[in-house]
Image (cartoon, rainbow, N blue to C red; front, side):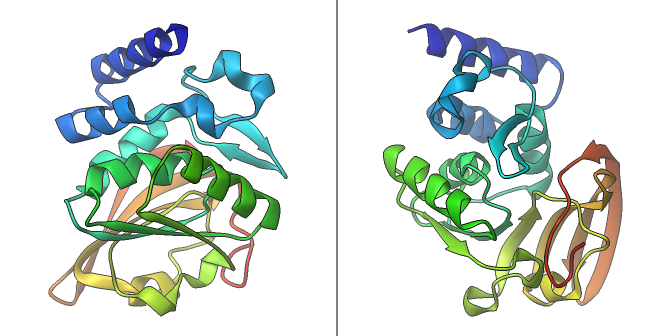
Length: 213
């Protein structure tokens, strides 16, 4: 199939450029079809390494950014993950394959139409370990806390205290901090200490909510 050819070409590109380093992440990219998480009008761009519009002022992240975040998160089988900003469900789908059937992704999305879109895409992809929930992601999701890993797919003014409190010790948060053009940051919680690392520049839509913009 033509889409499989373009998927393999993208994966080879991400490996060659150093974005995909781990075999488990490569396999996850193999298992998930990006064309199932975008608008039909953009099918020709499904395997371009670019963000794509999914409506409501939101985007599906570029594959290289998904790969960067997955690598830094250092995901393990069976972990409980919190995603802030479901979008179309693509990033959660990739992570669902890395953490396996005994792991779980809880994903919070504020826009009702995108909640429905992401749920439909997850179901159509036969994924059973991702739950999409409507809410204010800037507050996290206390109901299922604490989480092994938390990652944020929108630009925040800072690292919300609410997310830090919902993170296990040890655990890690990946979050873009800034307004659209921002810095990707890692916060690692170890033995009660918080270690923050800057991972480089990035661009994300702004976080909207009580602890956002």
